[in-house]
Image 1 (cartoon, rainbow, N blue to C red):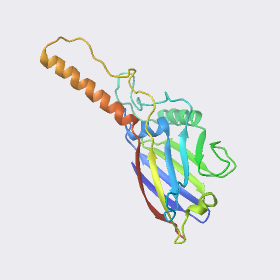
Image 2 (cartoon, one colour):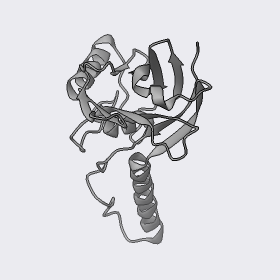
Image 3 (spheres, one colour):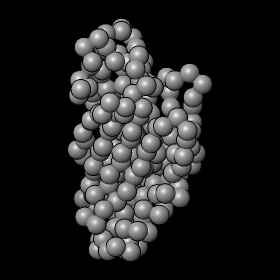
Image 4 (tube, rainbow, N blue to C red):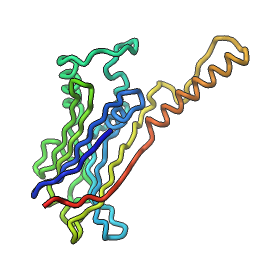
Length: 211
């Protein structure tokens, strides 16, 4: 995934592009539980800052590990109609933004009146782009005297088990040591993928607002 942060005199922008649609890839992890963009005053010790999370859903079972593949797992072409179908599905499912650190604000609609904007789309190359736009007025107290702020981007990870079992099991095939080892190796690999899918990843840095 790649990201960039920018601003004008009224708004702070975050754009992220990702293209890993594997079962436990970053695209699935973002869609499952959202991406959180946090800005904080790096001169105030312990500042929790302001956080915006998108997309937000109340359904922990949402996951899209069959992106651009058919029922047999075979890759399908990203035609205009396929891309349109996926983007309409995203638009239908995700209409909420979660805000933390702003008094009187919690979970709001994407059609809100406070000026926080969020959108996500696939393009014809199967890239997934998510964009956030935040009014600088909402984070003004997070900007220090040198016009710099700290930011953290968190990929939250999925809540649901991507395979319909708490612990993958594979039965049959004999009891020979080589067969047993192969089954154990497959189970371990599946459980590792599930653990990666559910894990939270974050990274951070500093951004100086352009004048």
